[in-house]
Length: 112
Length: 110
Image (cartoon, rainbow over the protein chains, first blue to last red):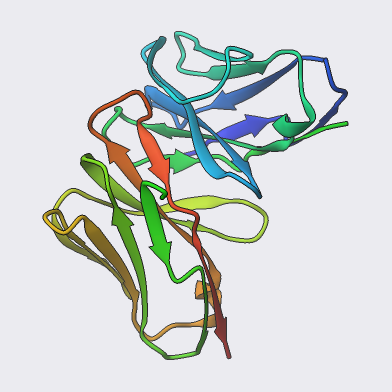
């Protein structure tokens, strides 16, 4: 069974631009969560989707948004990028919201 | 004070040693997770606990709900165990579902 895939793996953007990251969960998994990892703040929870509905949201500004499609694939969008948004963005999928999570390899975003 | 505290922050051990990593939390939780992150960023979920003890190979995880404390033990450590180990709690209340510890960087020397 294929694992969680994230595209792109690496991305360089300029301050003020917007970016969309994609996550394809393991087949059959209906829950997708997104996380941000930075050297200063460590891992932080962004949001979780289940069956196309946002179930939980972390403490991030409204510039961070996401959605989930009917095939469980998920995207997250960051608008008006700031230098501090440079990070590794990880997504994880699970069968249901309370089940073990499987992480993707991450997208490393650099904002210049 | 962070809601999830891990100790130690860094740990160097000799191959074969028994290793313990601790995690204390101050919020109500529905579950606690232990994650392993290798250089390059890939994260693997090791355990998800809500009570008691779990064992997988050389890894053992325990949780004491009353004391709000969990430990991850590695028996007969090996250089391939070198990684960052992260404790994460699944909060049963509030908006922020997952709260992460800052991680323990483990290096096992041959």
